[in-house]
Image 1 (cartoon, helix red, strand yellow):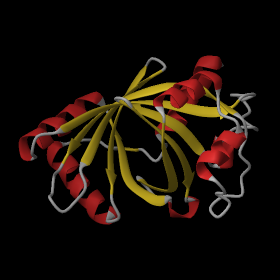
Image 2 (image 1 turned 180 degrees about the horizontal axis):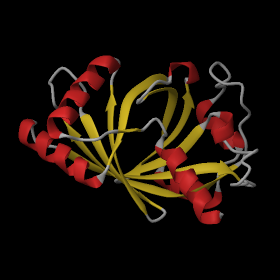
Image 3 (image 1 turned 90 degrees about the vertical axis):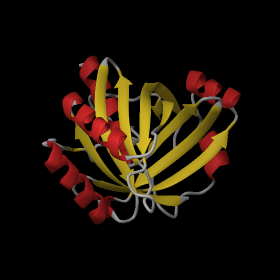
Length: 214
């Protein structure tokens, strides 16, 4: 388990392109990865009244496929630390066999499966795990730029899900004030309008699914 702290902004397509051109000009060659993120929730999920939802229990569970590797992740938001454009979470990751990942995506995960991978997480949440199934995939093209050698890369994400495309900036580091200052200075210079993006990808996915089902 580790604590993930990230600064996040949503941009429109035009502003995303402005930032991409700026970073491509001022940074070493970008690293590009493509991820398939499968989001899970309760079998009897009621999208209009998510009483049984993992989201209501402050749990984010996904399987991520990148090339020939699979990772199972649980995130537990640290609610008291959330502020504008900054999200902190306890994060648990387990690399799993690709065949197992594909089986779980098709057939679901039982609470016993989850505990077998993660053990007891009661130290950070008192929520009850449950049998869950996959509700679909969010595909992300992630472009990583190293703006400063002593800082982690800035991540530019293009995500496609349920007939939606959105554009997001993530910067995962402890020095959030410094990161925000750097990004906001760039946004100001480029006349970029940044939106609050403290709504995680999982929530955006399920909010869109709810819209479709209504």
